[in-house]
Structures are given as structure tokens and as C-alpha cells.
View 1: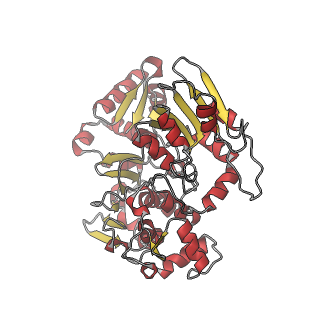
View 2 (view 1 turned 60 degrees about the horizontal axis):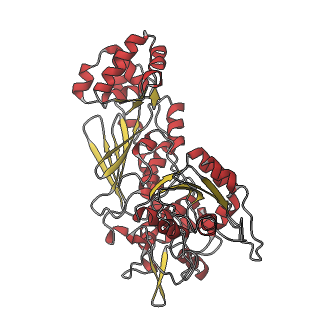
Length: 483
């Protein structure tokens, strides 16, 4: 990965009259015999992609079975380069390369995640670069990314159509009248779009962004367009929106369905919860504890991520927000986006990747989501500042669940009653401390709890046997993953 970044910096940018910035791209191939070869964009000829130079110009005569390819930018997808031009993703598949490491997604709407999906659909195992290296790639390509995010996804004749979701297509039974004027106005205002929302120029922007489609010389909403701006998206997609439930200490429940345009839901949820969150904590059980009320910023991030990154092809499930005296849980239908794993999410270092780039782009323009990430580090850091346990990711089919804890004692009370009853007072204190961590060693635990290392090992083994920790490594390298 580091070598690919070094090669990326050598890219040769072709002179262009249209002002379009080309990306800096580095590609490295690691062959079964240990041979390593590299190429960068424009190395042999202006405009040639790094993968093309590496595979077709340097290795066309060689078998590449068993090789591993590293590329700092997502390989271009089928159809993205115009009629008859073979994409880099297709070339990789044809070269029988079965493992590829990708730096970042190509944010151009014609490519975004579709190059990766083509590889995965053809049996290629795809990994993403480490988060810190991704940030280097993004910084070097800052100007390209800015242009690409603004560039139109112009219709062109494609040798192959590749979509990430059925909702990229048009909803022919709908039209512009099904869009909410308030939602469009909010998007235009926050995203600083100069055109009036009822103007041809504004509609063209929506067309370019994949939110409108042209059908028989008329513009109709795409599925994602209806999700974002539709007055009643559930009329077409019953899985749209967010179900919210508050369980009060008294045993009373309060529910609210947020069924309107996605772009309006975060603000509506905030207004609904503003006066309710403090009263959902039963302070009688925690009389001597100082319990911070969670700032809505800590809740907004998971809610937005659930709406943006959920799998909308799962028709039988909706995003959910569940508030209890001890926790706030956000449920998002769908497993983590391959190749991201649950472990990477729980370690808060998952690579940046978007399941639904069209939705993510709009939420990013409205400053409701990070430009290309999932806001993981901010969740962990804000919880730490408030002295709260680390949020926890779990998966219970079909939901990816993110749980925010409202107090240290709350993380203890969320344990199964049988497990909680089996813990000694010292072990309960130890579990509260562990809840603030993602991974620990026995030495760190012993020091924090003021116990001998032998006692620390005993506690950690108990937690591991109860399924609260996972042991990794051996000997001096042994660590314990929380959760």
C-alpha cells in the first residue's frame, strides 16, 4: 500500500484545455514469485490509467494468476470510459487476478463503488487501504475529488450496465410533483445551490446526480430521489423512513414514525428528542453519579449513517431508533458493506466506503455526513470526552446495531441478568473500566484496577469465558478485544 502511494506521487498529468483535473494513481502488482512491478497514471503515455499501463503495457505477455494488485484509486467500472473502451476493473478480471487492494473509491458518479462491485461480482477479493493511508490518497487528489463530486453522471451508451441498487432506476409512476418543496428548498439552501428549485438548471443538477431520470422525454424521480425528497416515499418503498421508540423508566412507551423525505428526518428527530432525552433516565438509581445528557451530535451521526448506508434492497426492515434509560440504539438493515467487517467498525478504524453513494453525496452536501467516511472516530472521541463507554457495534440479522451507552453503570445493566449476578463487585468495576476501551492487555488492566497481574488475568479469563471479551494473540502479544 505504501509503495503504491509512493508511485502515485509520480503520476504525470496530461495537459487539458477543459480544466479537468486528472487523478494521481499508483498501481503495484505483487506476483507469486515475489516480483513487484509498478505503474502510475500517465507514466508511458498521457492519460493512460495506472492499471492499464501495468497490466496491458508492462505485463500483457505474462500470466498473472495468483498475483495481488494494489491501486490507490478504485479501478474504473464497466461503461465509465465510453463506448468500446475496456474498463480497468474488467482488465483485472480478465487477467485472472483474484485479490485487489483499493485505496479509495473513485467519487465520480460513473464509477463510485461500481468498479469494486464488478470485481466482487467476478470472484475478486477486495480489501481497502488502511484509514491513515486513505487520507494521504485523498489529500494528494483533493482537486480531482472536488471536481469529481460535482461532475455529471452523463448518460452514454454503455457496453454493460452496472448498478449498486435497484433504486438507482426511475420510478415511472412518479413525477416531480411527488417531491417535497420544503425538502428541495432545504437542500438548495444548505448545499448553497444558486438555482431556484423549480428551475431547469436545478432539475438538471438532480439529473446529473442520479436523483432524476429521463424517461420518454420527461424527467421522473429515481428511487433514491424519492427517498431523499419524496413527500411520501413509503408509498413506493415501505422500508423507507425511521421508526423511533422511547422506553421511559416508568414503563411508558412513546413512539414516532418519521416517514417523510430523508433529508428532513435528522432535524425532525432532533426536535422530537430535545426535551425528552433528559427525562428518560431514572436518576433515582444513580443518585450519586453525574450523568451527562448526550449531545444530539452524538446521536445524529448514527441516525444519518443508518439512513444513508442501510441496504434498501431489504424490503422487510426499517431503520430504527430505540431509547432506553441506559442506551440509545440505532438499527440499520444490512450487514457491513463488503469488504468492511464488523471488527473494523468496532475498532473504529474501518476504511471509508459508501453503500449508497448517491444518498451519501446529498447528505454530505448538506453537512449531515462526513464527505467520504462514516464518522467513526468522532463517535468514539465524543463518548470519551463525556466519560462514557465506547459505543458498540453488533449484528442481529438483518440489523447492524450501534449502541450508545448513557452512563458507565448503564453498560453494566445491559448485561444479561445471569451474567451480571455472577460478577463480583471488583469484576463489575473492572467491566465498567473495560467498557471504555476497545482492546486491552492484562498489564493495562492490572494497572488501572490496582490489582496484581494474576488477579487481572483471572478477571480477563472470566470475562472471556462469559463472551464479553475475545482473546487474540499469545504470550506477551496477548490482547483482549472488548465486545
